[in-house]
Image (cartoon, rainbow, N blue to C red; front, side, top):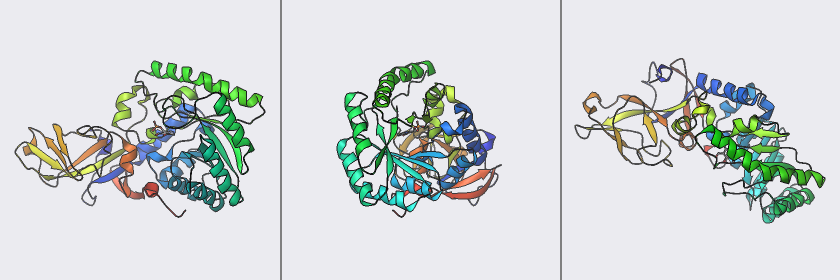
Length: 371
Ligand SMILES: Cc1ncc(COP(=O)(O)O)c(C=O)c1O
């Protein structure tokens, strides 16, 4: 195990718990800025960590724009006085009113959001007008993930025109998230981005010719942001999330991004040795995200064997080394998917030089802060 991860004294650290390694985190943020060349071209996604103190570290690195997925994350960013906050989610129903409340409550921040349908545009326009506020709306473009968005083309142009003429709304550009571009070889990922961008740029030209402003294109996640950053695209903003903390999956799949080091681990303890070849840790799927397949939700560092069973609060490992472990022994686990893992924890212990130096609240794991 990398010696940087080892705590000199874990006697007061509860288990299971989340650990953030501040030096590695700072290095990942610096590497992010280095990759894009200019922090003005960055809009990192806060969903990975949901933590005010990491937002502040990014602000100290010159980053003034943030992206988020929930109203609670957007509010946390408002509390941090982030100047430019994109809630990268289509607003519908009563969330339109909550969005209007955010715009009113945090005047130091400029909020924007997404839409991809006429009904959402109407609902948001009504809510913002009622609250006597205005906000920019980015058109969400479906570039192949088929999760949300509208395909680039004539219908997309019509929706953008609708945003431009709706009271309370201003056209804020295009949202171009390609979460399906997870090709492992970097040349394949680059080729996929280049191919996907053609129709998007055509749409942008059409909008500009029609006299509509397209102030920005918010593009990519961790796997593809370096490709967008390397292109000479006006108004491009790169929106990676995961690489700030990084994890087993991204570290394994995207070896071209190996300057990003996993900066979040889980501390777990042996709670039982039920058979001569089994060790059980307090690391169930309420402490580590369970969207990866069972047995592959984390890597237990320096623990040999196979993860054979995981319940809500238990992780059972079958190992010929079982006799080496006794109840209370500490182990460290690297999550396969760090973003939903963070959301399972109320706070993270912050580690620097092998010592716990602070505790940071995972503030926007809640669905509602005040709005
Ligand atoms: C809309 C959007 N933008 C950006 C990101 C960040 O992507 P990544 O986690 O690959 O860095 C995500 C991830 O889910 C996303 O949904």
